Amino acid sequence: MYLAEVATQVGIGAVALVIGATVTWLLERSRKAAAHQRREDIIRDAEREAETVLKSAELSAREELLQKRSELDAEHNQTRNEQHQLGTELERRESALEEQQDGFKKRERMLEGTQKNLADRQKVIDNRESELERILHDEQEELYKISGMDPDTAKEMLLDRLGRTLKQDTGALMIKFEAELKEKQDEMAREIIGMAAQRCASTHTSEMTVSTVDIPNDDMKGRIIGREGRNIRAFEKTTGVDVIVDDTPGVVVVSAFDKVRREIARLSLIKLIQDGRIHPTRIDEVVAETEKEMDDHIKKLGREACQEIGVADLHERLVYLMGRMHFRTSYSQNVLKHSIEVGVITGLIAEQLGLDAHLARRCGFLHDIGKAADHEMEGGHPAVGAELLKRYGEGEEVIHAAAGHHDDIRVDYIYTVLVAAADAVSASRPGARRETLERYVKRLEELEALACGFPGVRQAYAVQAGREVRVVVDSGQVNDREAAAMCKEVAKAIEETMTYPGEIRVTVLRETKAVEYAK
Image (cartoon, rainbow, N blue to C red; front, top):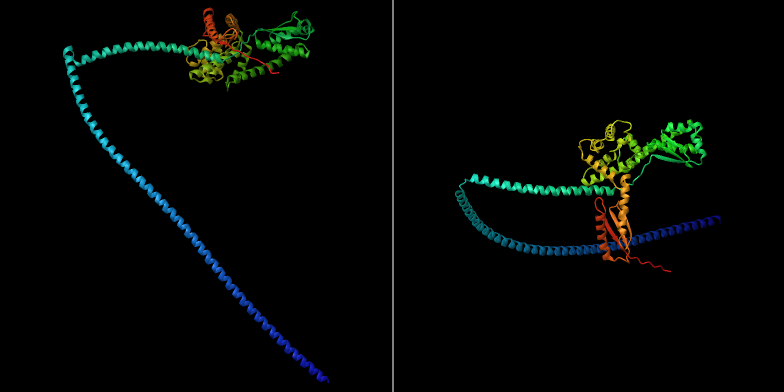
């Protein structure tokens, strides 16, 4: 029984193994069949895809070939058109060249004809010249026979007569031209100097020999005088000035011919009055301090003057001396202002003459520097100035201008002449000095009064240093024609009644104004 069961189980197991093996074989076979089928499908897909790619490539190649062919056709057509245009242009140029060649040939034929005509005329002219020479020779021979002179004698006589005639004519022309040249020179010189003087508008400054110092009260006068006058004596001794304390209320007078010392004394006295401590020791301290401040102020004035006139690279000592001239006057004219004015006028004249304007200004600016030190050195201010300029390294033109601007030496440089002329212009300019100032003001008053004497004149103004008078007339009383006639009458009246240098311009002004207010 047991064995039967075992056998049955073994049989079942064997059957199961057979069945499993069969199933396995079947599965493997089906799997291989599926793989084979899948491989076939992949191969077919690849073949179709390859065919598609091949067809696409063929289509792209055909399209590109067609595009290239169309481009080549276009280029071919363009090239053919360009060649056609070029051929047309060449044909046109060839025809133009042929026309020019024909023109040249015509001109050549014309030139040949002209040259032939000229050659014929030249032959005729040569024949005529030969005939004229023969006739002239025969006439000369006939003249020689008639006059009984040989050719050399006749030539000498003719040249002598011609020389005398030329000398007479040349002398007359030279005299005429010299007179005209002299007249033009004088006119140009007056114009140049007048223009320079007009362009330099300097002011007039009147100088005095005394200065006043205000004091707060009359008690300060006693303190200034001091016990038994010791303060005022110490002040006068230290400063070198005279102090006048009189009954004039609120004022103390400082007197001295040296304006530098007078200014130092005035400033020192103001400081002492403000400080209130007035005694000999304090006076010495304040005066010494003020002298130092004055030296700095003088240097500043000199530098400002050099900057104003445009003179650079000047020695410090010369700058200081130019600053000192601010405190010196000549016939009431400030010497530093006069020097600046002379420098400006000299430079302007030099510009008109085409000379070195910078050098001319330097010569004019330094021409009176000797006046700042003539009390320290022997000799007049031209010699002293020349010595100072030479000592401090100035040029020959500048030294000579300082030494010779008063005609003390022989003039070697043109700048000396210009400085002398500018010096005279500055000194004699109306309003520059006290003597001419009075005459100048009187002439202006007379000029305005004369113009105001005409009927219809409202106001008259003398301007441009008396070189012009402007007359304002009433438009209601004087019309345009009457104004023009009045201008001539005023000018004629000035010529007949007044004495003046140069000329005076008369300007008559007439205008009508209408004024209304909007409310």
